[in-house]
Image (tube, rainbow, N blue to C red; front, side):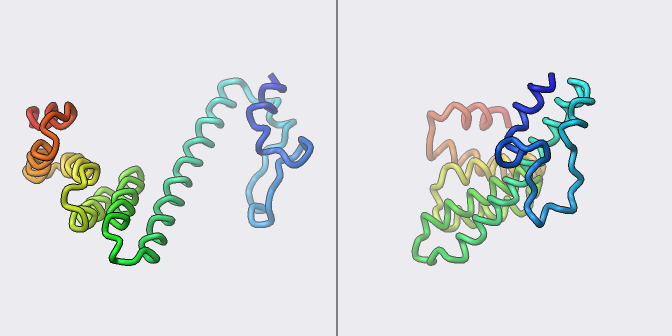
Length: 162
């Protein structure tokens, strides 16, 4: 089992597979679990920790993406409406994963102001309206989606269920 633990977390080890995790200077205040402590963990505890690490990593990735999209919007000239629309839609997706649905909704609306027939942004906004229990607005977006792509299965299923 100790070998499995080292294999699973080998990326956390320093150069040449040192026995202590490699930390940059700004990580020095973090608590560190050494390999000898890893050997004392049960298989269930290892899996719990692995799951928690992956959750934290994903949250960090989402925050990072949101920040990148915001920076890209600052630098993207306003004449590039299609690109800006995609950036707003992508940032809306990141915000939605953070549970910031109201802010994500605003980004979808901005994306659609720049590109009114942007299917992905309209679909995302319709779903956000549903999650926010604004069903009249969701229905209006689904009607528009149905007009844009009348044969889209996902749109038709949702449109006829609302």
